Image (tube, rainbow, N blue to C red):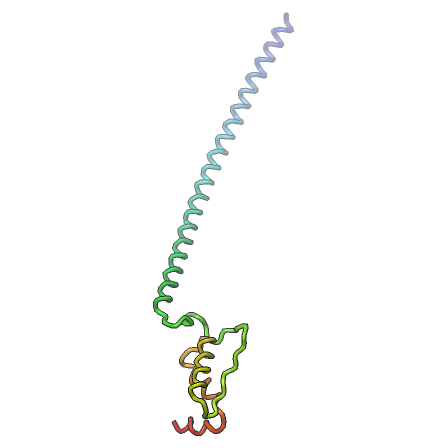
Length: 139
């Protein structure tokens, strides 16, 4: 009978020890749960802030795009001058003959490369044949 009382005491001690350890474990888990909830809330706020900034940037870009589309009558207004193209066009030389044809070809060249108006006269002047240069210089 002494054995059964010792066994009962041992069993009670084990039960008490397990309850104590389980309580500690549950406390630790509760602390971790609160820490994870706090971290998650911070991440959620940071993500929401980033999303707001991205939305603002996209709206700004869309607005600028819309404004530039309405402002520019030329589709090349936002393109930098003299872009590299797959097809290389040569600017036509002017020899004093067939002026209308030369003007058409020059305009096509300028449009293809999106040449700014300020640069067009210089490019055209450089492509005048020898017989036309004196006429141009007298202007």
